[in-house]
Image (cartoon, rainbow, N blue to C red; front, side):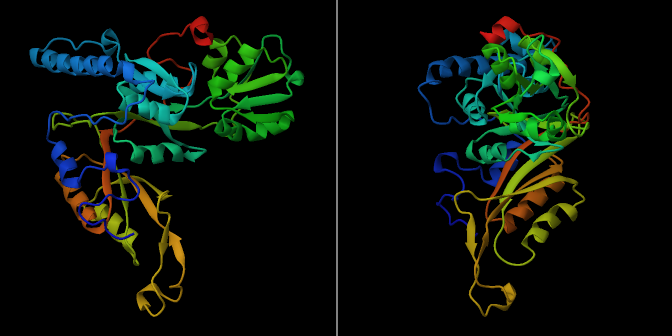
Length: 396
């Protein structure tokens, strides 16, 4: 993966959504505001763009004015601010949206990318999406979308997942022949479902499975979902805590159009997420990670993903001793996602990223945000804003 010449686009990122240069990202850490970037408009969303822009701008202007006067900040719900999530009402992501964005309304979206589009096109003011699960690992589709869209991570939250088997009221366990849910939920309950000797059917999300069973009145079908989803769609909980491993925690990220600006007065622990590529040659990953270790910066996560648009690198010809005996052929060309403790306003982190920029052909800062210090403390059965959704509204 050679360095990208000046004026040319990196092959992994579309021209209209090129990453900020690192120097600009570091400068933004000291800025009080940031100009939001607009993505491509779509006919379905364009009708609400102006309304969303004015609502969001008015809210942030009011926040600034109220803080300076020492009065109470206006709640987001007063101005109709929304957090997008993937799934239908009752999904685990909806609970995470309430926890990660207190006071916000919610906007359900069919797919992960629809949530990214809703935020990019001003249909929502935040997006809350799963990024990692303690059993299933990283959510790769979300990692790929983080590169495709110019959005910023401004927060993280987590839920302890409690899977339930739900069915229509009056259904007996022995009558259940088929169980539907999200593929990851089915995998997390694999041993339990095999003991029932049922057919597994994958759908888009866990709450969607409960919705299908309820709407279609499927008498011999169960759904793996949360207790709240079962109650929301009028199902009975046949069994609770059916996941094979009880410590089942999902971490979510909160996205915004603007980066979060930190201050020295904020004493919370912050994390920063970056993505970068590496050049050819031995020890490149070691050199990249050394920029953090040499400055005593705690790295909390590393994830590698092959580049989707340029996945292969041709190795050098034979005779190059630096490539070793296996110099012919190809290898994957990787992107590396790294989370570390610190902010862009921290001088150590600034030096580390400038050092990394000398090694990495491509580098982008995805966001700085408060670290979730209560990982898994909140159960998926809790509605953290204290509200209860209406079953009638959910089913309609």
